[in-house]
Image (cartoon, rainbow, N blue to C red; front, side):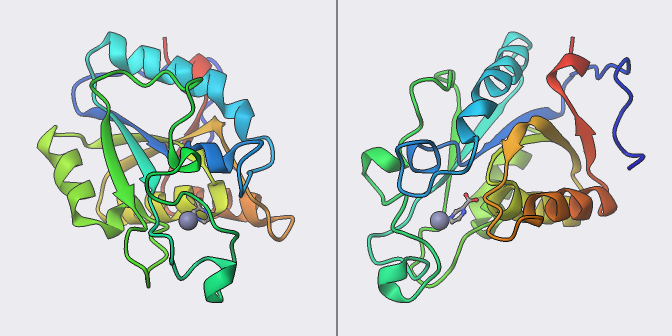
Length: 201
Ligand code: VGL
Ligand code: ZN
């Protein structure tokens, strides 16, 4: 697809840019209750993006799936997923291997029993927090490509933010084998640009 930037093209980060790390939580990693295949592989790239944003004093947001114990998406409640990211549990925490700065702004989603909360923008506070720092370009990576990343990017594009998808920092659940690729195709089609860490000096 043509919206992948060529390898030698560079992105200059500046005021108005923000990093958005989606749901990088223990339960989505190996040993967690809903591990995303290869989820741990995004950590080095994400730490690289964190370093580049922090160095320039640019805002870093971390969303988290933050479910009550009786959330409707859990198998026990008739939903599709094993229990995951329950408020206050180890599985809902960010892994120590993710080097979040003290200044990170956390956005919790999926807190309502009856709503999936796949998009961080389902909680109005998300847009408020992003707008309060004046961010217009969102650099989005994390887990999972085919759920929370896709839905967050969809909403961000619909709200007219410019979105860069960090292709080296996302992984899919792939309930169906092509779900991750389909999600990426949709994000591109809706206007997201694909980038990798090497494009940010
Ligand atoms: C997610 C499945 C269930 C995600 C959250 O963060 O992508 N996926 N809950
Ligand atoms: Zn969830």
